[in-house]
Amino acid sequence: MDKNKIMIDYLLKNNFIDERIAKAMEEIKREYFIEGPLKESSYIDLPLPIGFGQTISAPSIVGIMMKELDVKEGINVLEIGTGSGWQTALLGKLVGENGKVFSIERIKELAEKARQRISEIKIKNIVIKTGDGTQGWPENAPYDRIIVSASAPEIPKPLLEQLKNGGKMIIPIGVSYWQDLILVEKDGTGKIRMKNLLPVMFVPLVGKFGYPEMEKN
Ligand code: SAM
Image (cartoon, rainbow, N blue to C red; front, side, top):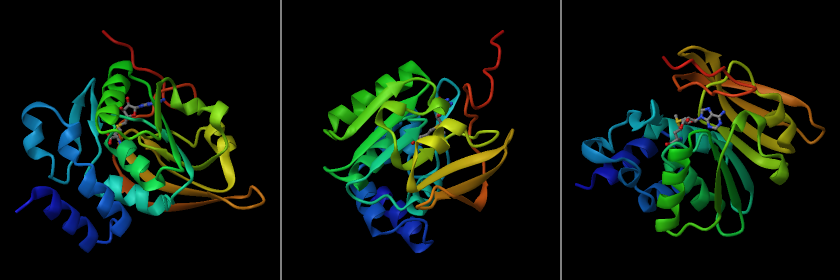
């Protein structure tokens, strides 16, 4: 049986994704974003290495984050931590032709690879740049949705500022590998409400409003 279909059925059955996300996952296969012998493991529900000490997130976590964020057609989304580009491509499908995804990756080589993959599969509503995502991307703000795929000590202030009134952000917050996935909602008046969704484990968000870079020996 098709391994991607088994994965999608599992995610649907457990309510981690809805039908729209399932359809996007059918079209954008995770194996395309994984290289070498690890391709074999693409449909296991685990994060996998993508080089430079980084990972592609587990399918259930990618699914839960996009579902909780309620990514509608026609909106604009800011993603911090492009990584392999799998979630970026899925977001591109979910927002559709009239929506836009802006994605920031701090490691140049990963950003380039993700850009190349996304251009090969001809998704045209995504822009990826290399940089420090903790500072957001003010030129395209405000955003309907912000999705952060690395864990921060606290919510970076620029991201809160760049979120639209009525918008939502999802971000792992915590110290070291003890983190909670937080859904942040900004109401029509700009008031913030936060909901703790579940414990998670992400690589650190490194930057001006995140963790400092570790010194290389
Ligand atoms: N969702 C991604 C995927 O599907 O492949 C996985 C993202 S990975 C868990 C987190 C990524 O965040 C890494 O590629 C890391 O380099 C990046 N990152 C960490 N700090 C960052 C920052 N300040 N700005 C942009 N990207 C950052």
